[in-house]
Length: 324
Length: 308
Image (cartoon, rainbow over all chains, first blue to last red):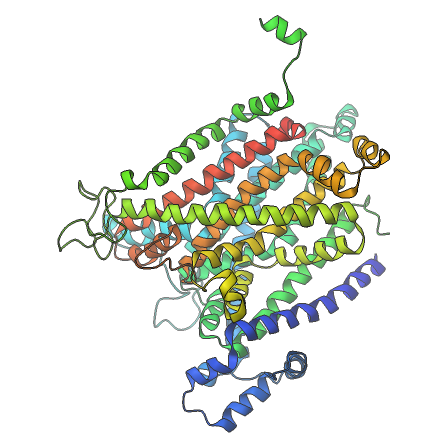
């Protein structure tokens, strides 16, 4: 087991470097960081520009530039952002914390209800509730997050206040403008709509996974064996059915983190939620290379990490998988 | 008659697939809805009531709620939303269809070669696609978009950054990976079967086996992949346009994404028709094509039948 994990780790590290190199090249070609710097600082002296090129590793030679950037990145000597010349880490840290909060809330709600609905549907395959859950899940995956976000905003923010006099849920930010300090209730109130939008997607996806996985398990031989031994139906379902059905679902959950992040990016922007998604789109729009690269590294690293977790959890949960 | 039918099962596989498709009620309804929509779009000279840039009446004509001379209301400069939706869906369907066809063509080629040859090529291709597909779609799309747009010598081939052609190429570049994975899986499952072995035994070349046996036998999954590629391209276009990175199809021309993007600004002012109708259209298209794809999968894969 340990060898297996180590071997996967040994793969992940070079992949991390390769992917960040590709991202580095793509961003340099796509956003042209030197031009963005000159655009935002039109009166920069050649010496300033040279210094900017130096600290960001924007050598004309991509390979040399990448290693220059990498050296600065690893030693935590991060260059300041182009716009406003601010430190990158404090902004990134806040964005990450906000996104983790939103993502964790949405994933918890989404995975819980998704699994429940999937089980609920799979227990009576072909029945009315199965068809209902299946159709609803289909509608859920066909609705892009911005569509559900817009419709929710329309109903809960705009029309609710027209009908009932006060807005039910705020539609932007974490706190009302001008608020300082921590207030759990206000924060949760602001998160209701974004969490709903992201959770809709997660619920739909997981309900489908869980349903088909459980159906596979329920029709397997060992379920019949368990029943024939006289174990109670409840025990058969929980001890033999669900445990086996969850194995593929856990793996898919780890692989799916990219699409959850994708949903978060879209949702955050619509609700002006100050997280990683808003950070990305605003710095991407500005072509702010010093802001973008650390963001990319975090995303690349977490995608690779969850891929690794998927492999490991699969091998760990299912003893039938041979680790070669 | 029924007795004769059960005694002599003369139903062809194609007929069986058709019967299974028809038994999926949501898909049949979807086919009708989608056909109506396509008909409306194809006959846009007759079905659209105004030109793409034409105001419904003399000012004041902006933000009119739905009424007799503008069934679905008007936008910020007095254009008819109903007519613009027809033009917009036209552009989006073109993007969806063309990019899906290109990506299915590339995906079939790469997937069948990877699955059939195996070895290093297979490893590399599948690793790269897995990695690409693991990243947030929007991020990869935006980064690739800017990169391709900045490479000037590509512009004559793939068009300007904001052209429809560019968007089609962009989605084709992404779309093939999912298709390749599906085709590869199918080829891997098929290539150990007896009829492939038989073909090999009589001396058929690899290319012949792929062309005559593997791809025709994978037609079901390929069709399914095609429908899902169409949906993801249409939704992808809308996503890009929603954040202002979509196609600008020239003087006032529109796409579904542009119309959905306008909805963002219309929400807080309460112009509900500008938000509701484009969103409903997008969801309707996505949902109907998804249902059709789902039914196609059930229809062409008899093993799926039990939990349909």
